[in-house]
Length: 110
Image (cartoon, rainbow, N blue to C red; front, side, top):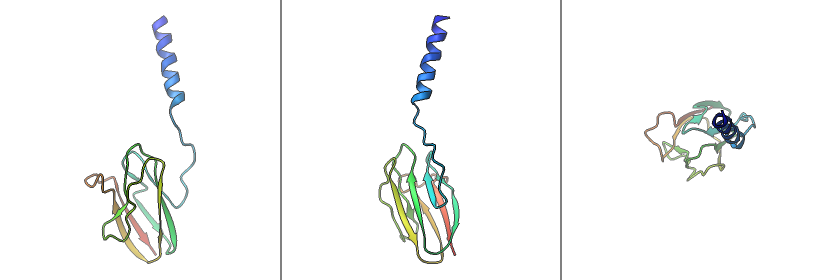
């Protein structure tokens, strides 16, 4: 019985120490979370600035396939912003995880 109480206390302590970001995702934010882009597709208007925020515990990049933009390394908690001034379709991926199909994003700008 004593061991089960101790285990319960340890579990409660671990749960309460877990870092939680309760802020909701903003309209023009792309989260890099659990090695994926969230959302994976987005439609925006010309002139919109997107913020790519690393909410994961691994480093990531936002690398556009045609080299239109490149974020460089985005560390945990950091962000990269890009203003889309042309109407076009863009595809981007994380250059650290190029084979991960979930870590790709499609952006349509009208």
